[in-house]
Structure formats: structure tokens, C-alpha cells
Amino acid sequence: MTVAHSDRGTQARSVAPGDRGATRIADRVVAKIAGQAAREALGAPLPDSAPPNATVVVHRDTARVRVAVELPYPSDIGGQCAAVRRRVMERVGTLAGMHVSDVAVQVERLLLTHARDVAQGRTR
Image 1: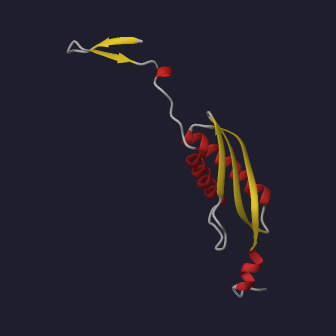
Image 2 (image 1 turned 90 degrees about the vertical axis):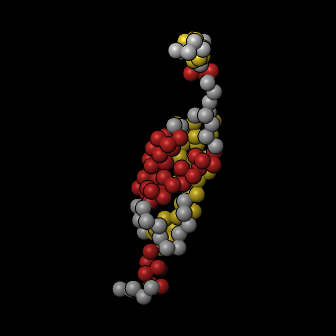
Image 3 (image 1 turned 180 degrees about the horizontal axis):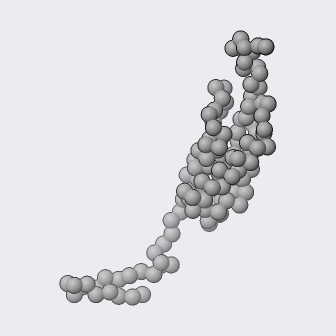
């Protein structure tokens, strides 16, 4: 520990970085970041879809994320899941300062875009 002298003759102590403590980010905060990142990756939601729901397991500075999404069909499901994975890894890493070891994207429901068009009277 080092001691610094101030102008008034009192001593101010400087604490080494390892002795200052730690910041812990709650799992639910990381889950909210992951859910928002999934929404950003998917773009505008469909009218009948539920927002993405994320659950996380955090161990020290590493997070494992599971995101449940609803996607339009027909669409590039694999491409959308890959975009969600990339965005979640990037945003959790940037905002929470955590390494994301795994992002599992679970497709809960496929929403038929043709059925929605038929219900609105737009048939061909």
C-alpha cells in the first residue's frame, strides 16, 4: 500500500486495484441485456409475437445465455438465429463486460405470415 501526502499535511491512502473490491452484475440484468439484444437483431416484431425472453447463468465473468424467440415463417430461420447469437454476444460483452461462452437460441413458435395475410383479406 502506498501513502500519498497532501498539501494540508494529512495522509491519503491509495488502494491497489486488486484490493478495491469487485462489481457484480446480477443475472437478471444480463438477461435483460440479452433480451434487448435479441429484439435488436430480429428487427420489428410481428403483431402476434411475444418479445424474446432470455435466461442466463453467470459464473464470474462468463455468461451462458438461452434466448427464446418467435420467428416469422417462411423465413431464413438459421440466419435469424445466427444474427441473434452474434448480437447477444456483442451487447453482453460490451455492456456487462462479460465473455459469453454460449448462446442457445430456442425457437418457441413460427408465425405463418401467409395465414396473417389471409386473415386480413390479402389473398392472391
